[in-house]
Amino acid sequence: MKRRCLILPTLLSLLFVLPGLAAAIKTFRIKKVGEAPNFIALNQDGSMIYATSFGSNELIGIDIAQKLVTQRVRVGSGPLGIAIADQGRIALVACRDSGTVSVVDLEKFDVIADIEVGGYPNSVAIGPRGYRAYVANFGLGLSGRFHIIDLREYSIMATLKMGVSPFEIVVSPITELVYVVMGGENEVWVVDPDKEAVIKKIQVGEAPDGIAITPDGTRIFVSNSRTNDLSVIDAELMRVLVTVPIGEMPFGVAVSPDGKRVFVVNTGSRQVSVLPTDLSSLQGKTFKVDKDPTDIQVGPDNRTVYVVNERSNTIVVADVP
Image 1: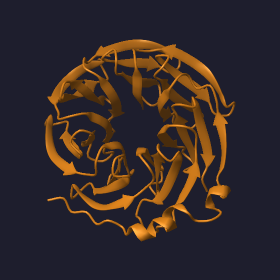
Image 2: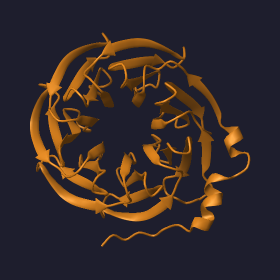
Image 3: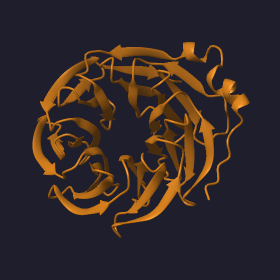
Image 4: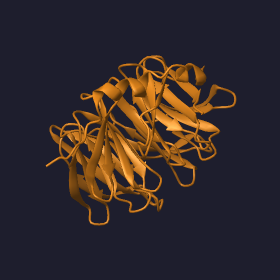
């Protein structure tokens, strides 16, 4: 049975309406970021950010210092999720409509391989050992798929059958267990890639979308867009510790590199919520972004935050002290 401890709704005002906090967060916008950009990834030093442009079937490179789009390359059709691999030298892009994962050389900014997976791939993540990638695939009908890809040969090592609507995924940096958000099941499925098997199913809120994990691999955060809350999972116990009320239609989630803060994109309320990962305080922060924010990344300084906004074709860059 799912065990959840709901923080009192009366405390919600502490989380979202602290006077003066939003004003302290400075932002600027990078405009004309493709057409309907959805997902983003940062390079290692935080100097470049890469966005998938769903409407133009491109991967776009943005120079952060110049605040400009400087690189473009056509990938497969309907690009969504993106991950950086090979010590920042390549990007993997899950292309939903073409049923492929495009491999992009980030130095030449050119597609060097297209891995055929079929179905509707939507998210990709890299294992900590660097030679395996993991792909969530909507599949066909009610049956999703999960692929393990060998990055040394750009080939599929294994494919697992999943439930309804596997979406976002994260990989434990410690155990390499893979956590898959199952949007149609209201669960997170835990995959052991060595055993090539689902070893646990964790009940979360309704219509889960985003997921992030702390750098030490101990806590996992899952945004539930229908119940407007955030499920906090203990990775060792593999169960939900607490469910935290959040903004309207939470979607993308990111944890700062130092593991101290979690950032949640609230698509419906066009804002980002900021919480301590240990939930030691409800005195969180929020700041406004543009129309239909979807994904979020945190820079290596732990305070520069990047939010991609689908309907605005922008990336909002925020300094969150």
